[in-house]
Image (tube, rainbow, N blue to C red; front, side):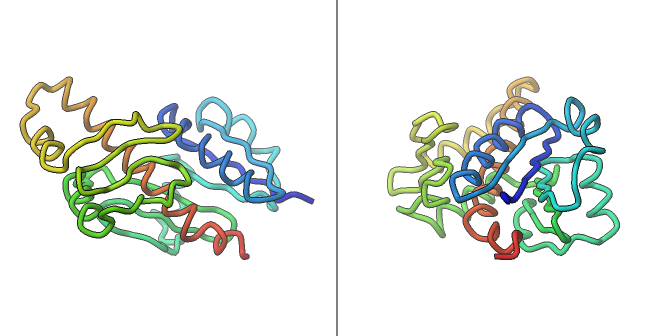
Length: 192
């Protein structure tokens, strides 16, 4: 019997990332994956779920908040405002609202120069001598210099632009976090 995954997202933005994660999990073996948005699908389908289902919450989903606010979650990764962990068959991947995107990019640049962040599984960012390259199913194939990215973060003062940029930065953090979970800890989460 195939292992069954339910990936629950807080909204449409995380849903896109969860869809890629779902496809990657399905490629790994006999796994059935379903992606649900919390308000659209999860709340109405919660009663149909089995205790045998593996559940991955991406973003500030209410049920996930309840898990980590009680201290029940064992955080496996917690750095720069990004973290994930699990208890039993329930995993939580969250980016804190006070994350520092510039710090994350600097850390990636120092540690991962000339390597992809995620060995290409989701194909988001590659750090190289010329800067960052976003590529793959969600990336845009755009080269971005580290300094120009940080400068743009400092210089944009228009509120609308800042809001859009912050959302993109949060999404990029989720992409990095999902990739790290997929490559480093998914097997442990599944007990394999």
